Image (tube, rainbow, N blue to C red; front, side, top):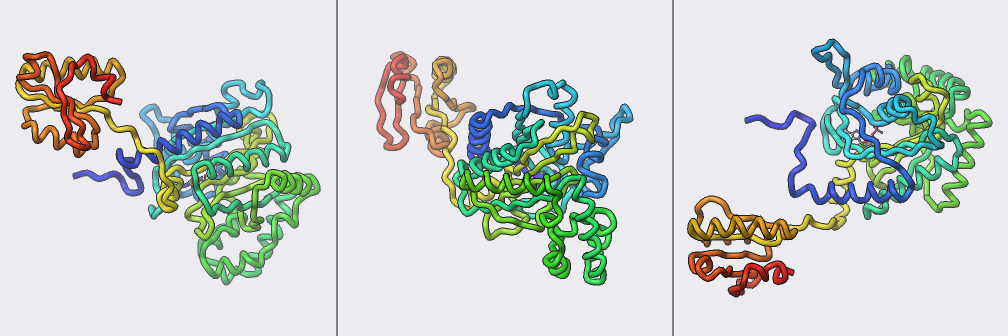
Length: 416
Ligand code: AMP
């Protein structure tokens, strides 16, 4: 017997109501804020991710599903959604559109070779949106507002918004220097991974979950103390706008995000009292990414959020989602002629938009009605020899077992 590969899962019929609920909320929030949908391929040239996500990151170094196809192309299953959107933006002439260009993606499978655990999978699904071509902090506030309103619209409570600014290519090198000096003076207290990060990706040092490294992170210099004047003004305007919008935020000096392309604003939305493992969504500015991919300098900001984490939290917080509608009618039949009538009736009713499950095979009436019960279907229509002769059907209310003989033409009006 085969099983789903480690770190992947099936989304079973009983889960689908949650996924559909999330999808409806995604569609309405994107419409509300003026975003259009863009779907990109599941795989892209490996170089796209290596270049944008960054060579020193965990995603590129350890987690990508990379393969060579039969034509010798080096391809990677998408480990995130922003770089493909930027690639498509450049490829399809979108820099000529009025700015900012607002795009969203939904239900994209994302692949990362991670250690599977609750809320962390090797294939997961994301929703995300990107606003490209504008550096106004009012846009940062709008993106954060949209993310915040989205999670609220799901009915989730006790959320916290974490916020930081990690500066731009002018001021960040100075900060990184200070950060490296701090960590170098604590080198003996660092875990093996952090010793490597110190050389290759110092910003990620702040993200380490090991307790000895956390103590070093607590006393580390803060990026917001090293911002150049433009970044400082940008960040303080953003905070003012968030206050204007009454969106509560917590400044988190250790929030750096995992991918290299982020600049200035970074943010995450987490269930309060839960660790980073449960982050619902996160995002930030990536003002240099489009240029890095061959376009003109183009500031941009976006968010990505994991659908499985949303579903986990909807269940944990006992949010009631609308159930999937059940089929309205079960058609049971006895005898070959009755079966012919049942087939015709099912077809007629479906064409009149009544949802039907018709019994197949040769089972007793009792077994057929048991199936109707198990499937929680409200009405059963029963056709036996007698009904074939008289051109009628029996309509049974499965909730109270009351039955009446009716003309099949009257059924649509009787089903309610
Ligand atoms: P990231 O691109 O790492 O910021 O991820 C964006 C969002 O996707 C996170 O906030 C999570 O909700 C979700 N996510 C990231 N990695 C995983 C994973 N391995 N399994 C499930 N969800 C994930």
